[in-house]
Image (cartoon, rainbow, N blue to C red; front, side, top):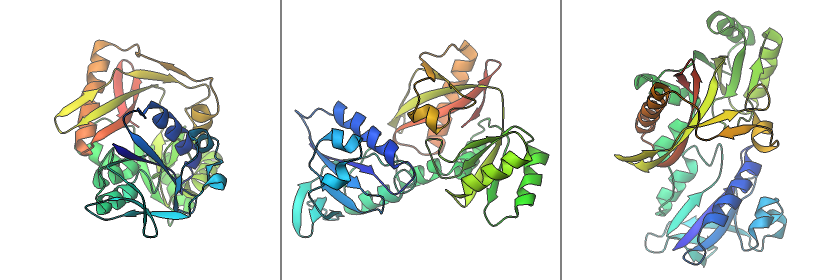
Length: 306
């Protein structure tokens, strides 16, 4: 099978994407599949790269690329990547490994559907709703899934109005997150008003919409979900023990001090509740293929979906 592996992208999670691409590439069986590396640069242009995966991982791929821009061609009979009129590869499947906006939010998925190329992962709608924390929370609420208290705020609102609303509804500590980012990019913990204002400014650098959540003293539990429709499998739960106050970008990608315990030490009731909520969240988003769902868990019971 001819598989296209798309990595890079315009978002602040560019470097994370390069590492993900390396891990996926190394686990694809090259005796069975032809894997074509397609890098999206920081300006959003795609390039075919015929170098090594190590050059992708260390970020040097862009300076060593041999092709100009390529496009995903919407030829229903021969979909693939083209350099002008030259066919570089006819693709039977694409594995999108872009993180954050333009990669996980439905935009790339829509391009692939227009190009007639099957792809791994969620559809346009599920990707868009899953990426947007505000929309995801609305869906989870409809599904009856417990969540930590939160408010949604926009960049056009007055700072003091947001602060007053956060203090009245959430208190301190609280967590401030861009609505459409992953990998903990732009997330901060605020313990007072001054920290809250600074955290809001930081989050608004990444998105015009942000989420502010009440801080809770809870364990961080996650599961992987695989499958489509009714053929859904949920993994054993794992627990993340961050090295710092919370599992931020540095703890995820720059430090090895955080711990991941598999399986998590959970009561039967907590494990059952997490499995049930993971299933409902996956179905509520109309997710397909694969996703990861993270929970806050305290006193033996799951208290919300992150």
